[in-house]
Amino acid sequence: MWILIPAYEPDARLVALVRSLSDAHRVLVVDDGSGPRFRGVFDDAAAQGATVLRHDANRGKADALRTGFAWLVGHAPGEAVVCADSDGQHTPEDVARLASALRDRAAARLDDAVVLGAREFAGDVPLRSRLGNRATAALLATVTGRRLTDTQTGLRGYPAALLPWALGVRGRRFAYELELLLDASRRGIPVVEVPIRTVYLDGNASSHFRPVVDSVRVLWPLAMFAASSLAAFAIDAIALLALSATTGSLAVAVVGARLLSATANFAVNRSAVFRSRGPVARQAVRYAALAALLLFLSYASIRTLTELGVPLLPAKLGTDLVLWTLSYGVQRAIVFAPPGAMESRPTAGNAQDSRAITHV
Image 1: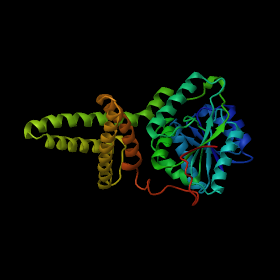
Image 2: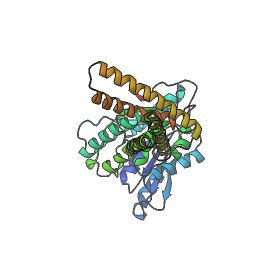
Image 3: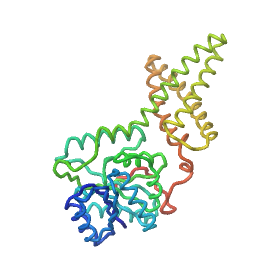
Image 4: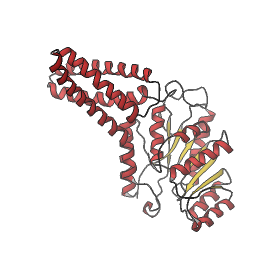
């Protein structure tokens, strides 16, 4: 088991963490361009047994993690890793707790999972950290349907089989760790939460996390989907009026407008919203099947609600909102899923773990 610690301008707490971990684990530290002034801290970490990799300039936490992952894939194949922060917020006991969770899952031959050290946010927690975590948790639940206790935790465990996947996930700086959770949901990779202590030092002044900016990055795919849906609605309305005026047939106008708007929506969602590179024909068939299903559900829901006494407009608005959310989830998970994501996923064994998110 390896412990990966990305560090930017650390202090003696990094050295203390390495010292406490090096007897039981192998430690890999990535100096993310901290500069000559901090060379002594990294030299002390190396003297305590850590392997130290260095960036010439600061590239952000995402690249520091990727550098560590790539080194582990090349130099320690088959080894799991726990990622911890260098600022003293992750205790050696909590690091060991995540390492044990990884070992236990491997021994039980459960599906490979991302293991999160989940803080309870009880006690004296800085306001920006409490609000930032709640915001990202709510946004992540909206986008993926997964509810996590702690989306911002830097204490995370990855089995060896997931490291090539983690290397390929896009995202910069702290947003990368949120992208990992989004992509894990898309690919059906389980996420396991292990309770850890909530530790904040000096009001979390050492954190480089930006709650507003990095939280908005989670919402961006959903905002793009909403914009795509509005654009499709506009195309449908304009085409309906134009075709009705030119053909004189309502049926032709309705069908033609829907085909135009659906084609445009499919193209935009595929290229801009979900950025899919899967086979177009297969995705088009799935999209058409989803559209037919949504049409049936819309009719059934509106008819049921109106028969129960709900006015037509509220019935339609409520139905459309629910089906819009359902459509996003189905398109993300099925229609535009990455190739192979629906058929298989990396596994530590043959047993199946039916829980997408687990609290241990």
